[in-house]
Length: 141
Image (cartoon, rainbow, N blue to C red; front, side, top):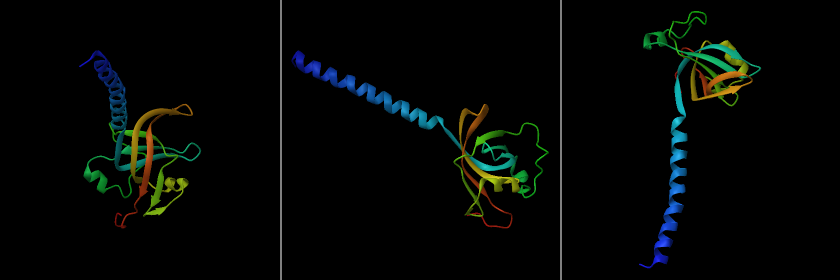
């Protein structure tokens, strides 16, 4: 091959490296955002900032008793999250609901993305994407 041919090949490889690096960075960014989902106790609901404080329920027997849990008694070591629920889809028994209705319930099925940030000076653990309230005696959808 001529030296001009080698320069063309070398030029192509320099273009491939930035593209591969970009794909790698995007893949790591997408995978680093953890998505959590489960049944959580609603500890606090702030209508003004649309922020919720939730606590993970314990073992399955504790989840079975979730029909009427106490908001005041939280076992030591319980995992808690402060979530921004501004853009969360909220449903009660499969029907759309208002954010202010969350105050009426003690537990909810919450799907959220863990990603630390600050909102109005409050350290937020993530963003709630879906909040579903399923009343006792109603089959899950």
